[in-house]
Structures are given as structure tokens and as C-alpha cells.
Length: 239
Ligand SMILES: Nc1ncnc2c1ncn2[C@@H]1O[C@H](COP(=O)(O)OP(=O)(O)OP(=O)(O)O)[C@@H](O)[C@H]1O
Ligand SMILES: [Mg+2]
Image (cartoon, rainbow, N blue to C red):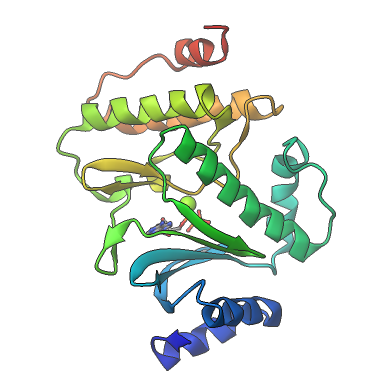
């Protein structure tokens, strides 16, 4: 097993509990991960690390198991989702369901032809996916760059929202300029653990908010945006 630098190794031990560390070490030993590098992002609910699997760059998203607030927030998204509603309570289990939900949602979005990081492996609270970026440098978020052709990027994203609903039957639920990465001119949608079926009681509200966020961002860039209510109607209507 290779862990790049001992400081990073130590940082890992400070942040994660014993079962999470055991899981990561097991993944390294089994070759599911060949290398674990530095932190790409340290959020409240998860940390994303750079890694490698057989020379291929990956992102390793590790959900923190310690936050009661996080657990409480997850429940409505899990309970109303028919694919996951059979779960048992208990902190670790719930976080594992959350990671699994992100994995499955990424897979469904890929099938629906939405650009997302390809999910490679999920185990417990650890998700391994394709790294969006190159040479260890992550791609910028939509919020971090000046777009050369905002109208085109808007069209692509609106198309992705349509594919999510029409082909995957899912609503992203947290779509904004902070959950889209721009890589080689293509927007990649990330952060999909909360995504849920269109049949979920929260789905229409979340869909409307997602479109509103995208519209607000691109409207500021001078792009002519579509009416979000008409678009929602188009998506959920029988057409
Ligand atoms: N596949 C990936 N490749 C490269 N970087 C990634 C990838 N997935 C996530 N990241 C980076 O990690 C950050 C956090 O990921 P994500 O949005 O999925 O988690 P989060 O739980 O929402 O964290 P936060 O609360 O910080 O937004 C992203 O903003 C991005 O910079
Ligand atoms: Mg995010």
C-alpha cells in the first residue's frame, strides 16, 4: 500500500474514525485504491481526496460519520426515495446509504447521458469516482471561471436537467454553479447524493429550485433564460 506523504496519512487519522480508517486501509491493500493523495475539498459532511487506481486518477469522497445534524438532514431524502426506503437507522448505516445513493445516482445519470464523474466503487462511507481534472489538478467549478460561451453552457446544462428527469427519472436537488465542474469545455454535474426520483414528494420543489439556480447564474451573465415554470411543466407534463 502506498500513501503519498506521512503528513497526509496523519491528517487522515485526525479526521476519520477507526472503522473508516480500517476501510480505507483495506481498500489500499486490496488494490481498489492504489494511492491516496491530498485533500481536494474539506466540507462539513464529506472530504474529497485525490487518488489513483492503476495509474488512473480518481476522486475519493469520504463521508463523515460523526455529525448528528448531517444524519437528520439526510432522512427526508432517503425515506421518500423508494429505492432506499427500507434502510435501518443508526449513524454508520445511514451514511453508508448516503454514499451508496450517490453511487447509484451517478450510475443512473451516466446511463441517461448526463456528464458526471464515472462511479467506480462504493463501500461503507467511501465512494471512488473518476477524477475531473488532470495531472492532480481538479477542474474549476462553474462558479470559479469565466465562460467563453455562457449561452452554450447554459443550453447543455438545461439539456442535462431534461435528461435527468426524462431519461433517469431523477431530480438533482442541489444544482448550482457550485456543483458543476468545467472540464475540457464540458460541464460535469457533481454532488448527487441527495438526488431523488421525480415521484418523491420534494421532487418538484427541488427541480424548480435547481432550474432557478441555473437561471439566476446565467441570467447574470446576460444569457436569455427559459421560464422555469414553463420548463418544469414541460418536464413533468405528459410530453
Ligand atoms: N470527481 C471529482 N473530481 C475532482 N474533484 C471533485 C470531484 N468530486 C468532487 N470534487 C471536488 O470536491 C468538492 C466537493 O465535492 P461535492 O460537492 O461532491 O461534496 P459536498 O459534500 O457538496 O462538499 P461541499 O459541502 O464542500 O460542497 C467539489 O466542489 C470539487 O471541488
Ligand atoms: Mg458540493
